[in-house]
Image 1 (cartoon, helix red, strand yellow):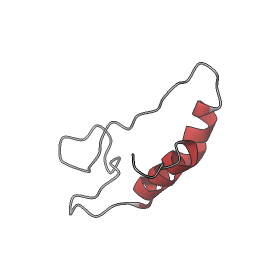
Image 2 (cartoon, rainbow, N blue to C red; image 1 turned 90 degrees about the horizontal axis):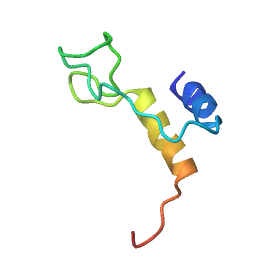
Image 3 (tube, rainbow, N blue to C red; image 1 turned 45 degrees about the vertical axis):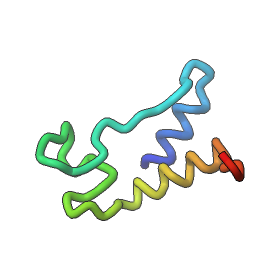
Image 4 (cartoon, helix red, strand yellow; image 1 turned 60 degrees about the vertical axis):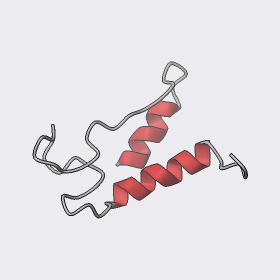
Length: 64
């Protein structure tokens, strides 16, 4: 879901960036289980998808 939504949003000329509100599933979250990291601090699949998408859009340059 994260990848499809992000790709759709970023394909629009008026969308310049996307953000994710809750990094973790901490008790102060907006949506239950909506974080990218579980309460035990292990990453969810969505976290890795976001990292992969970013690498596709902004390739890593050696030395930067």
